[in-house]
Amino acid sequence: MASAKATNPPRGECTQCWFHAYASRQAHARLGPREDCPQCVDHMQNGHPHHMIVR
Ligand SMILES: [Zn+2]
Ligand SMILES: [Zn+2]
Image 1 (tube, rainbow, N blue to C red):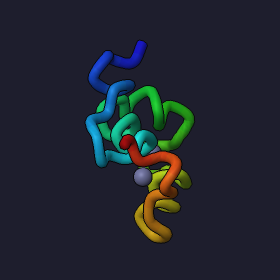
Image 2: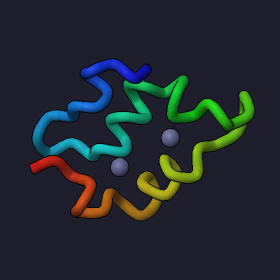
Image 3: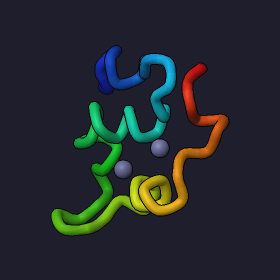
Image 4: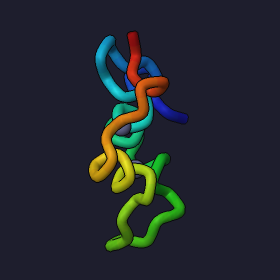
């Protein structure tokens, strides 16, 4: 289970990135040990979509 903190990002934070940061083990469970997370890489390269930012 993800913690309450992981699923309740504060205002201005990206929901996906917050979850991946605080529930990393769960969010990245299907990745290999040295495998990049495509969703995290996407946000790092293209920025965070507006609908994912808490407001
Ligand atoms: Zn993001
Ligand atoms: Zn990720």
